[in-house]
Structures are given as C-alpha cells and as structure tokens.
Amino acid sequence: MRDKSGGHTGAAKSGYGIATALITAFGITIPAMFILAAVLTFTDFPEKYTTYAVLLATLSGLFAAGFKAGLYNEKDGIIKGGLAGLVYMLILYLLSSIVYKDFMLSPHSIIMIVTGILSGVIGAMLGSGKRTKPVSRTGFKNKFSDPLKKYRK
Image (cartoon, rainbow, N blue to C red; front, side, top):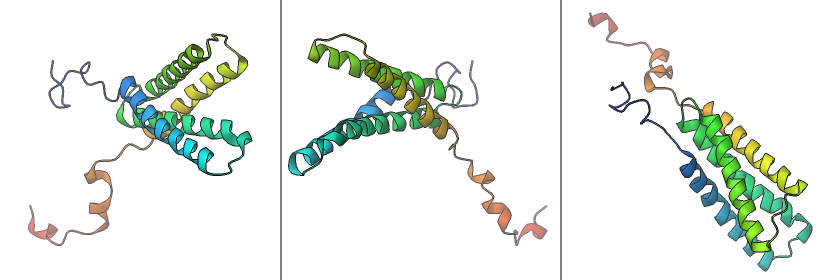
C-alpha cells in the first residue's frame, strides 16, 4: 500500500531511530569529554566541578539526540527520545560496571539514569515543537499584494 509520503508504506517510514539518536548523543558527548580532559590537563580547573562538567556534557548529548528524535519523528519522537536516553545511560552504566567490576545499582546511578531519560524526553518535546512549516504557509506571500492579480483569472 502506497501513501503520499514518497511511495513508502507507513511502517517503512520510521524517521529518526534510536540507533541514530545514540550516534548523535555519543557524537556530541565524546568530543565534549576530550575538550574537558584537555581543560583539566592544561588549566587549573577545580576538581570539585569535574562531576558537573561530565554531567553537563552527557546531558547535552542526550538533549541533542532527543531534539533530533522529536524533530524528525511525526508521532513517537518523545518516546524515541526517552528510549534513547534510557539506552544511552544503560550503556554507560554497563561500561562503568565492567571497568570498575562493580554491578551495584546505587542511588547515584538511578538518578543518572532518570536524568538521562528526562533529558532525552525534554529535548524531544522541544524538537517536536520546532517543526518547519511549508514555504506557502509562512505568511511571506500574504504580506505583499500581487501586482498581477487583476490580470489573472
């Protein structure tokens, strides 16, 4: 069954998926972490703010992923933004648990997971509100009168 969206069925038109949201999140977080590492190495940055800087870098990546998920998905952008936040935080939790050999779920870990989900959802909500309008509906044509209108029938 073909629809008006370019010949694909409704099931085939999935939009921006969770995997691409994760790539976006890691694509923002990893360079931000490298910049933070350079700042920590070459400047006199106070160590008490390191946790906040890491949290800011992580949440900004998740916010951007949620924003793109909300922007490119018509129906379920908020769900995909939240799922991207959940999967991202679970990947980070599993990697840190493997590195530190400690699979305890602390209150700090739970807060980070919930914060990651909320960041993805908030980004998706803001992204779904930024849908672009078609050119004919922007109001540009209506602001100026058409000088040839009287000659057209």
